[in-house]
Image 1 (cartoon, chains in turn purple, red):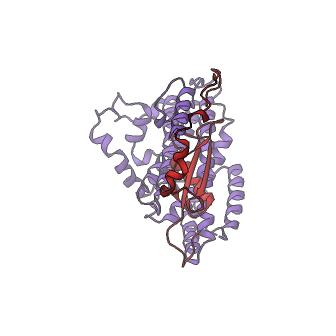
Image 2 (cartoon, chains in turn orange, yellow; image 1 turned 90 degrees about the horizontal axis):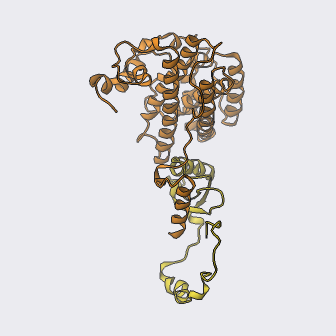
Image 3 (cartoon, chains in turn green, red; image 1 turned 135 degrees about the horizontal axis):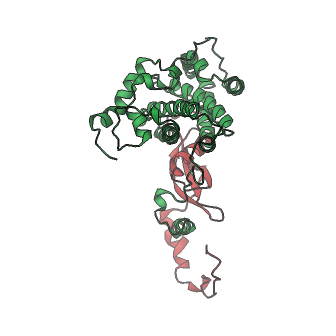
Length: 286
Length: 99
């Protein structure tokens, strides 16, 4: 036991006497030292919409993944999926804050004045004002293979997007992209591990993983709309699916709809759940 | 991964986390996983989510050879009265923190 005490004491020592090691120590602020004014030469309106789309993807996906907590096949995967959901929620908070800062007119009219932009955007927009891809909002009906298939294509695509955005002219978006990139590298690794395990597992798991891919595929075209991202996406998919003995579905999919606010009923349902408390108690603080 | 006919439960792994460079790995708990690689990922998710670690070891619990509580006295009692084996008679320099 004395070894444990030494290890934890030294952790506390290393971070300015912060003794709450059980709650973690030495955390980094992703925006430390970053000037948050929108730099000249950056179109604030376009920046806000870009942040809004990325933030909505993360928020809605986070909410979907949270639904797996206590429902995954193993306790360990409950925690893994909840961790990923929380990573995405963290990205959503930064991105929605950035969107609200860059274009204050995005803030919905019905939101109480005392809540920050991120909460106003999350809790007081109608489904039609959300800009997430439809892939994120789909209800996977508690099918773990679907959860994994969606997470895999989502993380692969988002990692490509964020890697590109580390060169953004907006230093805040660039910093968020750097932070998110490390997180997504792990999300992709986690999901790819399961794609291979199920795809190259038993006859039943193989079939269910292939079915799950067919389920997400119609929404992939909307998900990955940048040609450079798409090239990287296709390369990663080909490599993992080959290892998993799965085949790339032949469905073409339709064009962007979620990005222009046309969503499925699944989003209305999801937002009713997400926004219920904040709307019922608009004066609440948290 | 488990195949039909085998035990349906995943094997138990013990997890050791290194808090930071220069410290030893310390046993923090256990988990279930289908293979060592999955055990490592699960350990990352379960035991380092509050920024506790820079290194993880996992080892299958049934691969560990442990001393038995029955042998406690023959194993450990003989060292109980030999205080001279402790290096407590040396001055430790202030800049050597982890002894």
